[in-house]
Length: 518
Image (cartoon, rainbow, N blue to C red; front, side, top):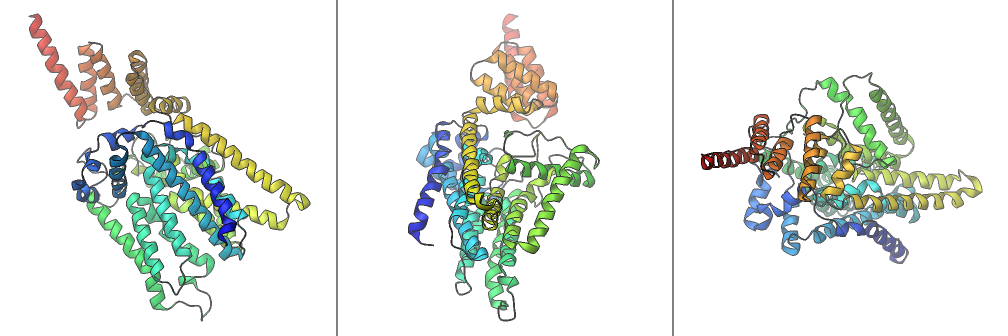
């Protein structure tokens, strides 16, 4: 594929992927951004680098264990902090640039796959995959949210690793080592990358390479197999060893405890169905999707989800027999989602998160491009095929771009995100609590009190909302009411340091006032 043929396409991908996220550059920090960047001492001194690699990723906040281990994120943030300080612009620009490069990786991967699978060098179909990826609205959360950088960097390095892998020949075994190193770096950004190991084997199966080389003459030698796969196994073991040491264990803690294995299994169906729905119809985008578990196989939601999942599985089996390239694309959708389908590992109201679809969307857009190609070559619409397919696909990308730009405005700041969230998740105690904080930051204390009380009506056990309500009572001089809320918060969460400190300060103040009056 000559560079002069690709150049206009590459420019178009860059312009679209950057353009649809141009309006996030003026956005503020949101939620965890302030804790991770402004209050994080680890990124302000290189002496913390050993601790970054040997401690779980919330170690700068609390000594208690956490299942998160994203050390490379802190190294990037360390560099960002030195370059941008606390200016959100630089951090948002970094996310947008990584998305641009990921979109280019999607094009190069799709072009290589189309060349190897279909033996054609046309760039229109790989370009369609990359452009759809560049504009897809499901990407607003990881790109517009500074803290979404882990998902972006993990995906970029995995895509780069995969690109090197599929373009490595038998005579250039060193490329497999390079690919495994990139895979290791990807895992250090986010543990999801480890679950992607099977995709290398699925690619080899689809193309009849490596372990699946066809024919006696093409059968790989032990040396080739060793050089091809061993670096990836070693990289995965090295990562898992580091992570196990850092988080003091292997399996994440249980946030949603009390569910039987049967209930855990049946909840996989509606979760997976919702992820698939969001890829195809990203029209109900929301930062916090409240998790309402199903408790019976015969729940209506379970049956509908089972039908959707069955259709997807049948598509995978059909592709496995007739279209190996499509098999790879469909499995690329599902495999990255396996880790996030185990809902007991999550805490809080939300289990489903749109940012988890960033990497699976590569499989989705690749499958779309393959079906687009098949419809074109089969002339499914007769003479009208070209006149309908190409403008139709362009119109879909245009609609995606419009929705992405519109959704980016929701990510302007804490207030805009949480205002949007309570409209779409009115049963979320967490959303109302955080909207109350946003109102408090704007000086609208009465509105904040309304939000905190709404949060507590939805969940009386929300210790954060009790503490926040106590803070507002304290600001209004209602010391007895403040002490009551702090006491409830501490009773609900004995390890809640802020509530304990607030209770101590206000108690001392009340004693001083009482003593003065006497």
